[in-house]
Image (cartoon, rainbow, N blue to C red):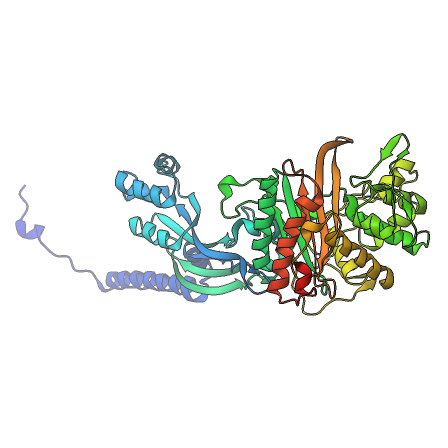
Amino acid sequence: MDTNPKEKNKFYPLGRFRRGTVWLVLFLFSCALIGRLVWIQILYPDTLIKEGNARIVRNYHFEPARGLITDRFGKILAISVPVKTVDADPKLMHESGIVRDDTVMTEIAKILEIDKTELYEKVKDPNRRFVHLKHYLDPKEASKLKKLCKDSLILHDSYRRYYPTGEVNAGLVGILNGEGDGVYGVEQSFNSYLSAQQTTRVAHKDSYNNIIENLATVQEGNAGGNLMLSVDDRLQSIAYAALGQAVREHRADSGSAVLIDVQTGEIVSLVNYPSFDPNNRKEFDSSNAKNRAITDIFEPGSTMKPLVALAGLESRMVSWGEIFDTRPFVVDGKVVRDSHFMDRGNLTDIIKYSSNTGMARISMRIGPNRVMDMLQRFGFGRKTQSGLIGESAGRLNENRKFWAEIDKATLGFGYGVAVTNLQLTSAYATLAHGGEQLPVSILKLRDAPQSEQVVSQSEDRRMIAAMESVVSEGTGKKAAINRYRVAGKTGTAKIAQSGTYSDLYMATFAGFAPISKPRFAMVVVIEAPREGGFYGGSVSGPVFSEVMASALQLYNVPPDRPEEENR
């Protein structure tokens, strides 16, 4: 049966009850929704805030610069230069099409100074979100890089240690390792003081790791402390050049030179050769990184003779006027002889001409215990107070129970004990200072420290006079300086290898100037010279003369010898 069209379109109005029910449901739903929003956003928003912060709040660290290292006049020897660390988001690089653009990838590789194939290998995984590309990049190059790919590369502030004086001060100053900690030299010795403490901050960051807003500082950092060394970079350069020339000229293995201010105990110059370029790690040789002046020990040879003689004088078993037999003699089947032959001589002659036989007789007479006591008083057998890590204490054998006669004899001319260059320089600074010993310092001092009298002043003055004759008339003539009176002692000792002595020598010259009022003491040590002689006077003496003359002139030390005496 057909239905009436009017009945199809007939509207059935809702009753009041139904309308009320609908409105009630809508009202209750709205109340529930609003209540929920009030609950989670106003009354108890912590969970929502936590979820939001987990997506945009990040901790980041900023480390201030490591402290400067300067010479005594403020010349920078080590400085931290601002650079950028470069990381990449391979996923974004793929999504932005950078990986498929060979021109852009070539330019990125060029800026980063890496091979393009290596760059492609690092970012080839499109699902990877992080890869490290370069640790140190110049800020100007970083700006070019950011223009090429703004969002897929992440740049962080960092520092790179730079050493303006290069290899001249490398052995003394040291370098940093990959973690930013000091290794070798001053960098390691004072690492805690030089190191900066990082600042930790909380910030809002976007999805590209850009900082939107700094929120708070979790930990306030501090910049590293600055360090002023006692060395003079002018003398460092002069000493390094002179030492290097001598090592090359004599085809020696290595050399070291130390210059100490007699009045303060400060190390004014300390150099080693060969050295290394601290700014070029690609050609780094660790064997050249050690500070030989404090790490390497050697038998000092005849440079010990003044101290052995002082031990004899103090014991009153030796006098200046006594005449000693200096002819060769046999001890325990071995011949003790001199390189400069003489039949007899007094103590001044023995020092002047460096008589081994004369000193052997003195050493055998007074015994090793008195010699050891004197050497200990002058600082041998223990580390100096320089503050440098890696310093050797040397070797005295002071607790040795049995001494053969030949050992007693050779102790008189510097065999059987081992010292560092720094110890020997400190001992000669004590001689120059009237027998008063000052602690050694690698840091510039405001005031001179307290000294300790270790030997009689009167005997010390007479020994200085004898040591002046070494330079004016004896074996150390090549250490003489125009218009200045110089006291010193040569040393030539065979190098011990595998329990015996080789045919190579350690050539040493130790001395100080000017005698009227000593200002600087210096020791030059050259290991294994193979050409042009091997004696300490002829090999190391000229280096001493050149560097000491420069030091006296730079510090305006008045000459103490009339000019006519130099003619």
